[in-house]
Image 1: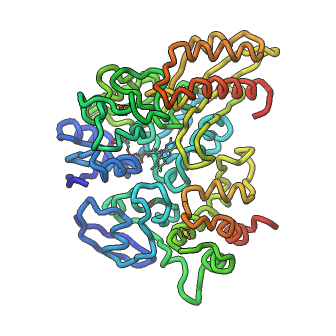
Image 2: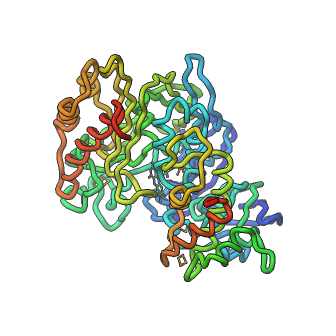
Image 3: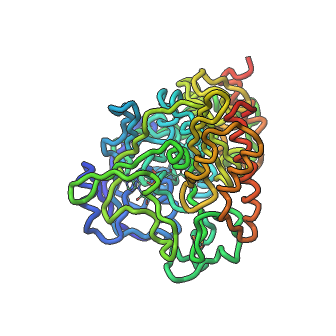
Amino acid sequence: MHLTLTVNGTEHALDLDPRTSLLDMLRDHLDLTGSKKGCDHGQCGACTVLLNGRRINSCLSLAVMHEGDEITTIEGLGEEGKLSPLQAAFVAHDGYQCGYCTPGQICSATAMLGEVEAGWPSHVSDNLEDQPQLTDAEISERMSGNLCRCSAYPNIVDAISEVGGGRK
Amino acid sequence: MKAFDYQRADSAQAAAAMAANAQGVRFIAGGTNLLDLMKLEIERPETVIDISRLPLDAIEDTEDGGLRIGALVTNSDLAADARVRRDYEVLARALLSGASGQLRNKATTGGNLLQRTRCFYFYNRAMPCNKREPGSGCAALEGRNRIHAILGGSEHCIATHPSDMAVAMMALGASVEIQSPDGKTKTLALSELYRLPGDTPHLETELEQGDLITGVVLPAPVGGRQIYRKVRDRASYAFALVSVAAVIGLEDGKIGSAQLAFGGLAPMPWRNSDLEDALIGQTPSPELWGRAADILLADAKGHGENDFKIALARRTLAHVLDAACGGEK
Ligand SMILES: Cc1cc2nc3c(=O)[nH]c(=O)nc-3n(C[C@H](O)[C@H](O)[C@H](O)COP(=O)(O)OP(=O)(O)OC[C@H]3O[C@@H](n4cnc5c(N)ncnc54)[C@H](O)[C@@H]3O)c2cc1C
Ligand code: SF4
Ligand code: FES
Ligand code: FES
């Protein structure tokens, strides 16, 4: 089935089996192997990418459902020598050990900071109508869709907190 | 995953009509439940109809002061909507307690209502399961049933409905708008959408072949204290063992109105009007909470590993009622 979509600013025309997940399209058809396959069932967050700016699990989406969409992967957030603020903060805070979950963590955090800015409440927000504050508890809750088997969580929270201005 | 024929619908009527005659057809919205099950070949549709671009993504005020939520409104957008945050806190709280940020960005209102059970044996094709393979038996009855139902189950199936959103909508008295393949539309109370398993656990709703959910309507807000309390094995990103959605109004120190629904306990979001009637007009007290729990749990039946849910439901209900009537949240 024919599909046209934009990935990291570049338009691609592809011919795909409708069964192809968005994740497999990125990894196997576009050689963008930054997005990882941890569970393939929405349970780990390693495959997180941005769909029209919003974070989603690319393993639980069919590529053919994304005609005309804009996808951003970890490769599109920054590059060597020109890291995105979150990429740089993960390096500075040692926000990983093996690094397998890291692309998903960074894509997820990138969109998550936007959600906070837009005023979206979370499960741990006391009041649903106030502008949420980026406390460590808020970061942990909002990032709970990204598991880290190496349990680098404290450093991941530090990195996100620094970029999001959490602990002023 | 089995091969399937992928089609896009360009209107709700067309989607319903396309699904009326096709064999083994499924709509796909967010895909977060359907694709999960298709990868495991538990769902094996021959035709998948993509409804994700239909114009069913608006949240609108209704004439009588309620809210109409399009079937394709994502769980994220619904939880972030200013009216939902202000007037239907129980719903926003339930949504925010479910899944993860990534999943809520894809999960839709219609798909969330129709998500399938998380019963381990339903997911394991090597095991008997009447819901997956009618007549094959139920491995959960004598098996690992920690997450299973204590109310509303049958000797054929004790699976629970996993949604948080649906529990809050049940407490709020929501109804579901449906497009039928014959071009007609119909409305069902959410309490009438789901079927109990009986001896046909594979039939989960009253929807007919081709029926497309187009939206959910919430009645005008009733005010009162709104609480969604979810008890689970970890603090986030886990399904409910027991959950309670409560909308409680107080009048002169007595309970004036009570709308309650329960998750994790039954094959559908569970509401019990006898329990609500027993609360109305009464003065809050621990004894009253005990009587309410007695009514809720009169027919409760544990199956071994899930026996704890009976005590947990009792305590969670007491906690929520106490909080709603002025105690700590
Ligand atoms: C790891 C994980 C954790 C989760 N945790 C939670 C949780 O804690 N709480 C919770 O409530 N949920 C949880 N979920 C489930 C999630 O909420 C559902 O997967 C989601 O809501 C389904 O919506 P969807 O739009 O993706 O549905 P889809 O997968 O697109 O569809 C699901 C079903 O509904 C049908 N359908 C969809 N839309 C319509 C329509 N408009 N009319 C008729 N039929 C329709 C489809 O044919 C399909 O059978 C979790 C999921 C995962 C993967
Ligand atoms: S409880 Fe229901 S879904 Fe689970 S194994 Fe038994 S029949 Fe299947
Ligand atoms: S690979 Fe997608 S969530 Fe694990
Ligand atoms: S760094 Fe190894 S899984 Fe997170």
